Image 1 (cartoon, helix red, strand yellow):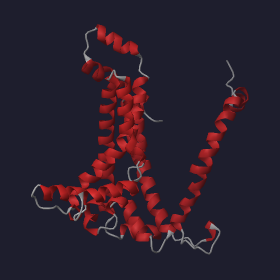
Image 2 (image 1 turned 180 degrees about the vertical axis):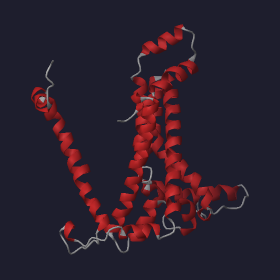
Image 3 (image 1 turned 60 degrees about the vertical axis):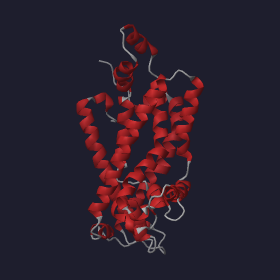
Image 4 (image 1 turned 45 degrees about the horizontal axis):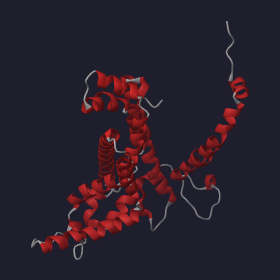
Length: 308
């Protein structure tokens, strides 16, 4: 019976590969795992005068009280989850659709220019985006109301209509971010062997049939990985997007207030690190449980598509 070789043998045999992997391991240890010690802030009374985290007064779950005693925890959670589900579904649908269409375009320069134009908004900062939005929808001098007045219609005060901002936030998020996901899917499509498409052409499949029966199934693995990554942070809203577009306009909070913006407004004066960490712990635990459940479901359906 062959003796099973241990970890030391693997380290010795592939030492060059492990040395190449070392910088990446150090990066994640320093930036992702060591900072997890800071979770303890959620259970202590933070003191600026104390230099030792573990010498601060332990208060248990007291820092979590400002969330559930606010009476808005359910509303904030539903708003955050609702927006993120809309972002995940629409971004992936739009990204896959555009990536498939671009992959079928034969013009090399047109494809590159289109891809660059769609990807460009990803580099626009949220501050610039807020300026664009304000100049579009400002009641007095905004582009929308200027056009409506020229047409003889009444101006619209969108900054007092909470429902309208549900769609506006989703639209501007798509405009800014779908190009990034589209590039990922397009890279996956370019890795698909041409033999599949040639065989389909011989069998008489048209362009739509090739896209539906070859390209889309080949994107499942990429889609599942991106989905699981997105679900892990489903309770962490796009703070920059919401805060820059909505700001402190209380008229819009009923439909645009998410957990991140509420925590920021609640703690920006007191700057209580314990309460802020407690909110982060709540978000992380929720995301962890969700990703474990979804990954388990995917594993039962098809193990190849599971993340672990």
